Image 1 (tube, rainbow, N blue to C red):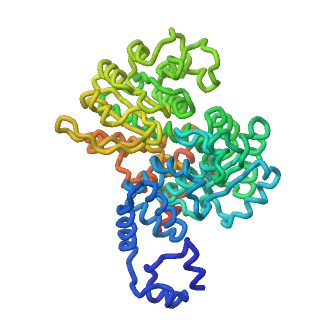
Image 2 (image 1 turned 90 degrees about the horizontal axis):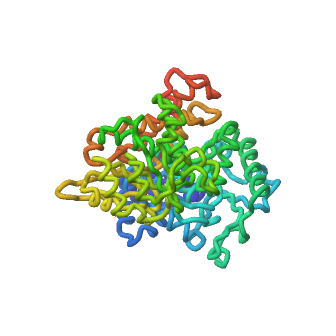
Image 3 (image 1 turned 90 degrees about the vertical axis):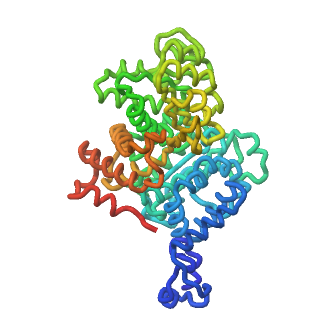
Length: 530
């Protein structure tokens, strides 16, 4: 019995087992004499992490800890979230995905290939846990800003679900990371003899959709109330799958909707610095993929609720891509771009800023350095306090750095980024820019819809999540240049957001559960505490 416990990551507590527990569980002699508190074990982990030379080494050390001592892993993440988050998620997870086939030790997650057609439902029975509440799934085709990484993309679902547990208290045993390994078009991976994925070019078209359909239906049969989060799909597939399932399955796409809620929260908070009236703001997006158009769609929904007509709200959104300003009549536009292709002469990015005079510039390109000095200076000439969001991940893909945004705007930019940047000192003033990390939103939304047993997740719930996050930004946060509350408060943030999301779902009659006397209490009851 004792050896079984030492090998069970969900029960193993290392030398934190008390004398009585060691006696009762048959652990006597299997552990050294010392009994340590969990706090001491956490500090030992952090000391050893800080000794390591590289972030990827720290990622691997934490991954190993997660494999052998689940309680200690999550206690460490929760207690040191600001330091650990960049190690288990962006930016380090990007490097981990690139190297996945070379550094993988214990495989984590569930892999589905085209060879599994017709067997997915029975295959899910191989997963040991039966009470699955949250599934994060990717096909690995657009991992962060790194492109097609195939099965190596498993690092993303694993990382996201670690944040569901650490940030919102979803129990680890209730989480399932999945890769739909339909092949890869990455030539380097196809030539790599150590690549662990399905070594074929990507399956597309009807065969691809049939596999996803079978997966979704298998999940509904095995885990009928589980939340499915789609992650890092190429833009056309991201929208196609979201539109296919959103009205009949409890699901969302984090790149489209989660990113949108975080960005909208930042925009709402920015008005407390700039003094701008939200219904009158104009927005320019660099990049026209799923993240950018998802943000625009949610901002439009918020503007409509604020009394702006839908078409007028859309005309406040302008997009620029590799070909310049997205305008009506341009050939080759995808369906999600069409609502934002307005009547205007084609022009370059900088000329479009001058002509359209946006209040906020939002980057979601995956192309580093595209917010040049000229771009920031033009935004600063138009706006006393220009809003600049460089949201691309990982850090190496950011449109500009925090230091560049502040220096080129002479400290006037209201800046947020997708990956973390450290404090910036300019002319004696210290700026601590906020990270528009989706971890602020997706765990809280997930917790909220699970607490009320929601049937679907319409945009109204993402709007409520964005407002909840914006409301939690304090005066001190704004004073130091941050549009988001401190990450160390993330469990409280998720709890408050989940309560508001659940309340909204009850009000919209979207739930399978009768509203309890205390919605906040029902949320707290779900939260795992390591």
